[in-house]
Length: 543
Image (cartoon, rainbow, N blue to C red; front, side, top):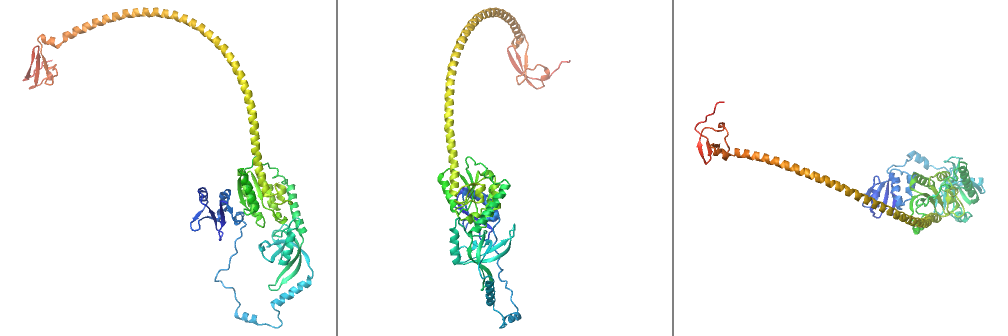
């Protein structure tokens, strides 16, 4: 068990307890309205989120309190309201109180009245007689020395009773009858919801004035007959609608690994199932939806579980309904029309293991039936092991077939390689001969082409040499002409002929008188030297 989920006393919050695990803390933190209680060291979640809590934690094998499936199914009953504190009960006024204290000698006491009524009833019914009715409120008296309950009568097709009578089963009679019923073949258990035929005597309890019948004996064959008739009626209706084989005809997943379970987490059958699966170590993924496996809460919790797995059918391979052994009347809780139709129409393959060796319920007749929860576990484990064995066998056969195919292919490849080698050798010899012939032809053609190209190159060389010589002669003549011009234009030769050169102060030549200003220092160069002079006056020639 990983942790627990309980309902608090006021029915408003779910209490989640578990040893610290980081992954579980992360899951709980995703729940709506979750709150950590540091004093009690638990998580609190609003009870309205019960389905989210169950969906999140059921896969982690949390133990859910019995109130949780009832809450999910909508069958959880509220506690009756108490009378507000400080509100006094009504009292008689003084006159009425005085009148009530006035007694007459002719009046009966309450006990005398009740005694006379009791005696009258006993005179009217001096002998015991048989009464038929449905038992209610018997289970809540479990463990008491005397059992007080009711027998009710219902109109056909109606849920509400049309008549009821108080019943007393005193300790001496109960100690005699109940073990006898349990030892009956098949065994029978007195419980709520079954119809019984009881031998009774009429009585009235003087102290309270309560009318009741007192049980003297019980007819087990009547109850067993009614249960069988109910089962037969349900199966007949399913057969008429073509539903009796619907779920049984669904195939098993190969292998079935994602297992849904509907049972009580406190049942021995669940512990046996889980222990067998854990010891097998076949890797089953089990999700438990806790239900009641007997009593009035069985039907609503079982229907809620069937509906939940139907809504999440894509996540599961099969659905198991299990409980431990019990009497025929315990088994009869599963003989319900609504439950039978929900199982018959369920999208998942249903496996039933409700621990009855001889008798069968309606569910055993319409779904795959195993005798006990352990047998269900063995079926699932065997399915995985058979699938594993089939895979191993197929693997061996595939390996053998692949080895044989590879051997055949290896021989074929070897033969093909030899043929290819021979063909390649012949092809290479031919190609070598053709290459040699082509090489000779190419050598001859190349030698002729080279000889032709050499002649062409020699002719081109001679033409280029002659053209180069002519170009060089023309270039030399042009250079000589340029050299003559340079010699003629050389400033030194100009100065030698008696001319002078005028330069400004910054060394630039003054080619025109317009570049010279009055009082400017200029330098005049002659053939044999230069002189610096100041300009007194500048004269420009007329155009």
